[in-house]
Image (tube, rainbow, N blue to C red; front, side, top):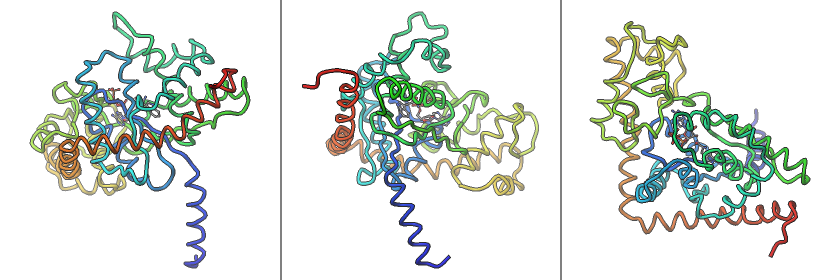
Length: 349
Ligand code: ATP
Ligand code: LTN
């Protein structure tokens, strides 16, 4: 293709893409772990300039399970610092705290009134999180409706999430379609965008269970983004593998541990499967594999940890960045929530 043709195509692509809106969220519910980073944050950073992006720290969602107030406050700021340290740039995208924009809680109520309870009771995350709990909050059942509100307020086209959130995005589509049917075309029907690589990082202590921040306090489960290099190396050295010695990708549940380690290496190095396996052709057993994977993880996370410290040292600047994000988010979502109210027959002030 000629250069001029290529430029034109790029411009067309740009023009089209910049009209597409992307929304995603992350809970300030514990220490950010490698799965959050590889499955979500890293991809957000890499693609933040391509479209119109909104990234939300969903503190209202975190309230659906019990939280210590001081801890929640600290984790919310810490998560914001982490997102900026990982490379989200406020000149390219909007980063904000959900509770700073009251339209989110309002949208949740309004959408609650068109969502059948049966749809919520079917959600697997709800079933998992409520199992064996003595008391379950109404908020936990309602969690996906709050999430639907987050997404629909921004006329979102794409929702980049890990595989575990696919069902919630499907529900959001159902709620949007039902609302459009009842009250007329109001919402864009969003799509989940699930990254193929990094979509599911498994626990190092149990490669059949998703790595999760709620379990990041469990010894050997997660690598936290803020762990120091020694700690990261220790976690990898303890990682559960199998009794064999073959270093290759596999969907054999027996080899889930090795598969997980290779998957982590693959996302960070952006190599293909064959190349990754070739990199380990000379490895002396799983011990060697673990140390080498730890090394690429440490190299990836060290600069983020350093920038994080700088942001946490200047909380004033961090708060200013978040206030700017909230203002940008409100500029889109406040008119939208008014549109929803108006459609439903509420009298606007
Ligand atoms: P919690 O334990 O509180 O549910 P979490 O660690 O599962 O937390 P979320 O805040 O629910 O994380 O998710 C933030 C983002 O990180 C989502 O896009 C989610 O899909 C992604 N994510 C979470 N865990 C993993 C994982 N192990 N592998 C890949 N992506 C993940
Ligand atoms: N439920 C999501 C977090 C979340 C979200 C959103 C993701 C809340 N609102 C809107 C995408 C879009 C989670 O636990 N990962």
